[in-house]
Image (tube, rainbow over all chains, first blue to last red; front, side, top):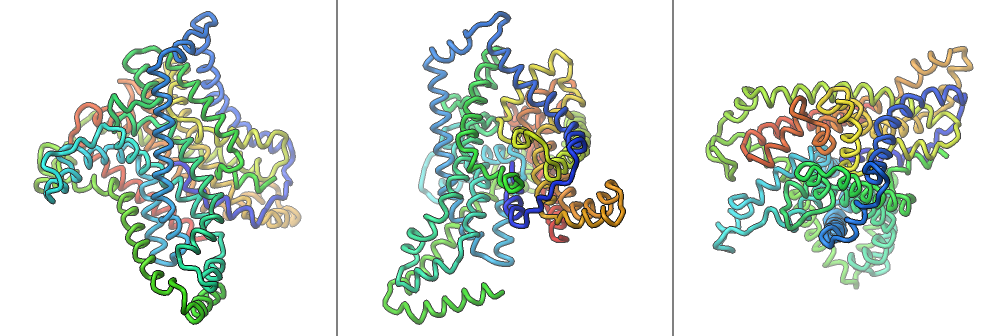
Amino acid sequence: MEQFSLAIPDKAIASGGSAKFLSRGAAVSLLLPLAFLLAIGFIYPLLQLAKISLFNPEFSLDSYRRLASEPLYLLVLLRTFLVAFCVMALCLLGGYPVAFAMSRLKGRYAALVAACVLIPLWTSVLIRSYAWIVLLQRNGIINSALLDSGFISEPLKLIYTEGAVVVAMAHVLMPFMILPLFSTLRSIPKDLAHAAFNLGAGPFVAFVRITLPLSTPGIFAGCVMTFILAIGFYITPTLVGGPGSMMIATLIGQQTTVLLDWSFAAALSTVLLVITLALVVVFRKVISLNKGFNGVN
Amino acid sequence: MSIEQTTSQSSLQYARLNLTGSGRLSRPLARGVAGVAVASILLFLMLPTIVVIPMSLSAGDIIEFPPRGVSLRWYRQFFADPEWLTATFFSLRIALSTTLAATLVGTLASIALVRGQIAGKPIIQALSIGPMIVPHIVLGVALYLVFAPLQLTGNFLGFLIAHTVLSVPYVVITVSAALQRLDPVLELAALSCGASRPRAFFSVVLPNIAPAIAASCVFAFLASFDEATVAFFISDTGGKTISRKMFEDIDFNLTPVIAAASTLLVVVSLLLMGAVQAFTKQR
């Protein structure tokens, strides 16, 4: 559900109200509550997590060695990346047309499209996973429709598969693709496409040679965002996936709830955290969350 | 307005000039294909949110589609079940307190980040939106490991800390953006007219960023009320949120009561998002 407000920081850069007239003492004291909150509720727990993964109670790398030596865990890690990549691709495939339509429509239709993107974004992930189970189960809508129309004679096994995980996760993450794409597409002057039409290009050529290349920053931002969010996803893969489609977050959950191996869970979590932070650092320039802040400095 | 005029002018020119190109025939066709594609993706996006509504009104004993008959029995069961009600009230209490705490902390920090000149600002900014980026399962495990020995699991204070951390990025992003849009000259004018700093804030800055603060209240509330992953780890039998209760029920017994609970949550989200639209329109 992350950034509904993605579009707002963009606009903020233009007017750039950046005068700084707060004394250092005042600024620091205004920041104190946040610093305290993050210290006790964010930084300390994450450091503690890393510590528990390394000390058991003496320093040992056993958890990490176990992670590296068991093919099963590496397979889960590999599958996590693969699923995240498929989710990202599906989000791009489905999100681009919607973002494009959003950037071109006006008035009531634009509001309708925006509502269709934002309402799911602010619906609990849990509800949407539940809905996918309902839709995809043996006697769900999809199977009933296929049976009634005579395409199949036996209900298909749709739920608790890797495909179901990819579709349900793409559904959750698609708004994170659409919003950055929309803000890029909106900023491309429409005259450029019209110029291409005037020069004899058809809609396809105009799109491929003008609009698509100009929208690459948005594509990149959306892909990075959805991929990063996808690798750490817990609720949807756990509820919609089966034992054969386990991702790293589900593995962590299993270690804590079924096997109660907290030090191994801490090691897995630390690995996931490091991967996520590495991606964020590498791609920090394109993560659109920061745009509003960059405008200040 | 003038941009729109230019656009329609150039499409006229296009119609006149491009007589030979294949574009003339294929453009409406491309439009039709694109329209159908976009409509089906939008249906894909909306379907899971709306499908829970007919499910919740089903008169049958199991979840099926189309539902058998219409009844309110699952709503009755929801409101008669002390376990659902306790979880709902626990969630509401946490979400309202989180809203208050996150909005206060986040707004103060936004003022400092936008108007103040301090060392290490990029680091503070990165940290303040960090809880949005760090996978919630990692934070859930980490918070459990810290909270369990302190007996903060299944506890109001534990949830308040965890959910305020998760909600504060929404507030910082929304309020910072509003502060950047606000011309600082207004505040300087108030100060040079003799207003004290608090007076300038309360009579000039606050009324201008009030819609953003109201919107960030909604984001913070929903971020807490709908939060499921961290709640999964820091709940226990003594105190669980509605999300944790739903997660258990979806995993173990898939009754239509979940659809009733989901519909109630969807309605809450819709009403609050409608309120955000109203705030932003006022601007």
